[in-house]
Length: 177
Image (cartoon, rainbow, N blue to C red):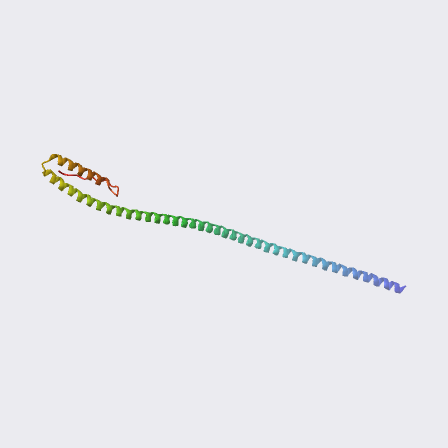
């Protein structure tokens, strides 16, 4: 019986020791659990902080990208506007060059017509001087009838000469008797 009693005492001691070990392990486990919870909270806070910083950085970058995109769009619009202005100016220069060439041709044509007119005028002047001399000579003649016929011929000639004008400029001549 003593043996059984020592075994029971040993078992009771062992039970108390196991309970004590169990309680100590529960306390250690609880402490570890609390430490893990605190570490987890700390890591979560750091993660939230980093996430927040990352989001802020991302937003800043998005704003920068958006601003850059708007700047690029603005530059593209400005380039397009400048290209349109360039095209417009080139067209205007081309039109003005064409107009200048037309005006130069017209000026050259007008100069040629003026030269032709000057020559014609000189010829008419010489003819008029000749007619004037003839009229002066005819005025000396006594025969009135012959004066009239010659005068009519001369007037017809002058009329014909005055109507022939290559530059389409009307001229009139004064004949003095």
